[in-house]
Length: 286
Image 1 (cartoon, one colour):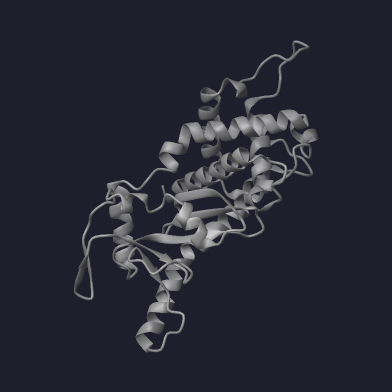
Image 2 (cartoon, rainbow, N blue to C red):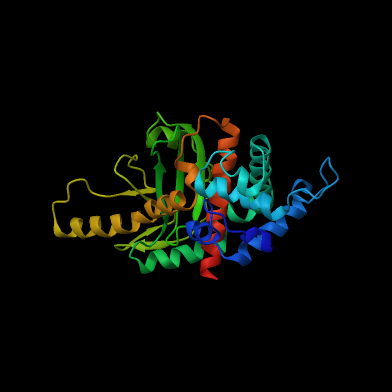
């Protein structure tokens, strides 16, 4: 592993780790899993019969592109990958991450997950609340819709709607409420003000429809009770905003120009960044 930590003026190792706060043990775990999953990352002999670049170098470059949002040829001197090879390397890395970890780190809520989130929501004063829902637009050409819990874990990610759409248009295309519409949603009971409810809800902005599964803030609170609710709702609603901020800070590629990439590549890159984000969240809580 020592060649992974080679210092370079443009990409010093200490700065690289600080960018997205991943422990070395987690990186090594990802390295082993990716190498075992895709033979592309194994070390091979080149056309001259010499040892090619190591798996560490390949993963380092993939992480550099994701974390720094840099171009394919900007770290050629550091990792010794040609531009075309660097692009191929990143695509293989994203497919490997999705293939290995998608079922775990982009899973739907299971019963244990739901119980944990509901216990935390009840302590925060929102019994029955599943998470915070919002869309990330920024300057990107494609919108990300996400549901985030208190620990910034992203439970739902819908990416692919053109950036000219607003949050409501994205919701119409999203599979978020398919289970509710089809009657497959998890059943649980809770009480609010003496009334019994059986479906969970999401905290949203005022732009979303007035559905029972959305709890929005008051646009013009006219009483102390409504003002208190507005304060608490907006406080919990910031979970999704924090997640978007962390995602941009750790993986600069999601906020950079995207005209170079094909739509399927953009989707794979975004899902990879979300999976890695959730892995780091889990690693921090263990």
